[in-house]
Length: 515
Image (tube, rainbow, N blue to C red):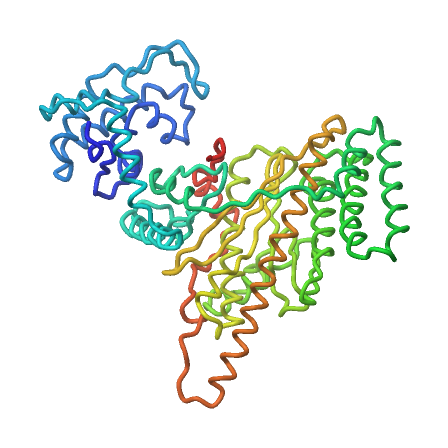
């Protein structure tokens, strides 16, 4: 099997289960992959025969395609002739023992072509050497990947659900985020390899207090450790203001943890309980701790209206009345910086909610919300450069199931947007898990604060650039290219009643983290 044949993809557009054969390389067309990536709307264990029948029908379709080379057709015929499974083991709830056609041997290609098979190790070494010689600089590689995404989206536009990220120029990715259901797996892997992710750590001066809190034996011990930290802060406040300010953030987080542990509220009761115990307290602490550039950050709770969506719907003549408003579950706003909405919160039902329709609808609702938010920044600072605008992110916190997922979105050119999962937190409400949960929670809060501060500074830079460039053109008869004209994401406010069913199979799908 040649490398070119292994990586060949059908140059056609296809819908339904045939889309699987378009987005996957030849080497990945086995039945197991087909089973895992298709028919997500049925009980797969009960519908096994139906899935196998559709797989064979789709393979017959490839054999009839003019666009498929003869060598690929021969490989597909080999897949057809292979026995699919012997029922006995377990994969994703369906019984399997021996899947003989997950990958057909490379010899199928070698025999067809009349070529001898190269020793595997030698062939791999040659490939690795070629890759090292052809490595591009990081920036060129990044631009190339986004050009590839643009081609991919244009090529497969007819197959995407209208509310899917891909149909709206959004590429969703992140550590632990699967490319399924629509993204090309090889291109996604390249996309992930090109990302630079930095690992942060908890400051040294926090650790003794976190350890004491996490290792305390009961509620009284937890309370005692919080009081001990508060007393220490009172003693050093005048001597070391910066250290006191940093530890004050830790103190506030630990106070909220203690409150959640000592609360009598049933954390599984409803969405309000989820917010009250595990979301609102930490969003308030994070927002209040951000004081850079006199941005006056604060957290607004109680279903605040996303004004960015209202503005964009009105600009597009799509706003009808109050029913067109986007009611969020919370917002971090910059009241000292044009009231910019920096972070949007969507809480998907009660803690540990498993209703897929609700989980996936809220994710996509939040995605469209962030597109409106970033469009408003482009309109507000329209004289800033595109390069500066590409450095800006806005954020979406999705409280879903047992997790908090922090997503960001930023512009990448050609009306493409990067939806990236920055971090996530597994919530463990029971006090016996505090040794694991408390350090994870504190790291999540510190990381979120740092990320938000980084991009507030970039927004401030865009504002300065906007004001400077606008002044240059004050008396000019010409106008430069404006961000308000060039940045045009799809503006859409989906409604649960009409649109949620269509989003149930659109993800996100979480997988083991990528390396």
